[in-house]
Length: 429
Image (cartoon, rainbow, N blue to C red):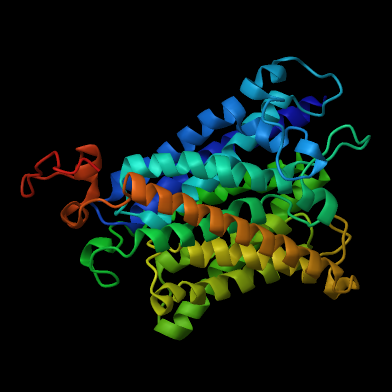
């Protein structure tokens, strides 16, 4: 056990933790001033409920020995309560407890991302119930497919995508971003549109500076997300760190350029969104491509995602904070572009089409993409439908229009003498 590796993963886990307030600020600035507390609470609340489930059975469902060797789900009883992680394993590269903490944030962040599609119109209790069910029925199984490696001696069987299909996903393009993005689409379809969508004044962003600050915190956290996935403080983490940095900047510039051409100016919201879209796309590819490949992926993601956010208006679904356009589209792009830009000089040591690898890797990446999209969308839609029938997902329209912060939390983010706020609500969202 190398103390340098342990120290790096401790630091990477702390960077991952920063992503929760980063996401809360990023999303919070995008919503109206009377919706920000609810949006931030959805991020913190979603993370918290998933952490509890992770400690009880989630880690075991993801990293336990695959049931019947099928590669679909880990044994929920193997690490139930995680007490087994307290014993030190002298042969492990890092403590199992540290690895569990590192992966905990992956689960929580993935769930919190979905909240952006439901901004301002979903009951807080319904969201917390949805987050718990979604993590259990969708994230934990898919994470097992993607992150659970089989042991070299065959004593432990992991997930089918990483071991049988042998798809490349260094840090979570499938399990995290595509998974959350398509789940956001399913939830948005069941929830329905916000009152007055798409031109309602109460849905407009109230603080662009908060969006930029949140994007900056997410960028910092992403280095822990991607480079930490190397699980060592060495060459692989260094290459991934570099690729993550250059891709993010390329994405910001590409989105700004598209905006400049289409709309006549480059906006701060666009810059923040371009940064995040490129980070999403480089997440699965960061260990498979060269810095030039990372630049290409960042440019493609920034440009394509800037156009993809218009899909919600053309198709008529209210994805409030563009989770579909950024995370779903960006995750798909990053996962599939590995099939083109992967080079065996990078840590993953595989070649894509442009480096003489043919179409095989692209086909593998496509199968992994379609499997995750299909499973996540169907199960998420069923969860949302059942909750809508049993407890109801939407707040009352009057509460939505005056601001969900008061209805859900009996609080207001910003108070002034000129705008007295009556606390409480008949609906108690």
